[in-house]
Length: 317
Length: 163
Figure 1 (cartoon, rainbow over the protein chains, first blue to last red):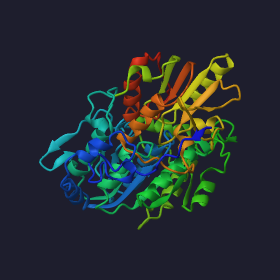
Figure 2 (figure 1 turned 180 degrees about the vertical axis):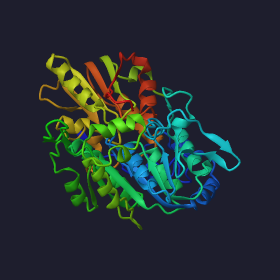
Figure 3 (figure 1 turned 30 degrees about the vertical axis):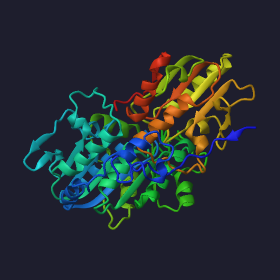
């Protein structure tokens, strides 16, 4: 007689540093449980207050998420940052919390820059007077250095990015995240919990294999009570530059992001086409919106960005 | 602790499919490689240790299947009636496909260890391990635990652009 292995508890690991470590219902069955439960109780985290102070000058915070890798989170984060910063009156900050695979330095054309420390904290890298960037990429000796860290060390760095970086007064803080629903995502939500986060933009590509992961990401947002600004369907359609014929490289076999958004009751922000010049601009560290501002893809980006509603809206001309 | 004998005692070749970058085709390559080996007459296991975004079950049209337990441990989900391709994934353990596994490192590591020690793979010529993007808990844990069974190595998947 065969027994079916029961479903996993989808309850969170509270975190090894949490007061509930080892004691939460999610802990039962975890090999670490005894170690966590016997650890001394922790005092309240003083860093939470410091993060709140640093974030006091940040008006809007937008997270860019996706369950799936390689769908264009970093690309979108960068174009969003470039787009808003085109208005010189706006101060924009772009924070890359992908510790293992930081793409932002390359995309923003500041590969190879190093972080400097001053009395007021770590200085972010300024790619324009009104556009600053922070990433683990700036802390590595060489671009091939792998950051092979377990969760707790990644969490520590993310906290440092929020506590120690001197962002100054910022209109928009955009946070680019790695794929998944794990340490980095829990940490950024946890550390920003004492401040107001406007919401998350979720990126997907049209095919079901991507939507499968993205639905989980949306579940994550709901679980941690992170407002969802909307879903963007990236790499949606390819127009051949030679013959202008349109193809679907990633066919939306189950209705794509628009149907998923409708099924899950969240706003659909629109489609961004697959234009090889986008990837090229990212590899070269240039703003696609500036380099190819008359392209259909740039128009699609502007439409998606202008359609984002949280407690405010962005207006790109 | 886990004894060396407990880890994959009857597996000929262990191959990991890795990439720093997400979305380059690790799961696609791992799945197609497994299918190709089965067509060549080999007995193959395919283990998906991407706990947040497990794609392999979908790619083999195995969504909704359950994991059955026997005296030797957890039985892999077989993709074919002749049981040439056994699959293990957290996807088989979710109540609903939209359920997110929002676990921190320690709990993920525990699950991966279970996949390595508690699954009754039987005798396999090949075990292919599909991984999530990155270089973190999952990768460290699987490599640490595989040391005793001498994995053949890793297949690195990439796409052409710089990032």
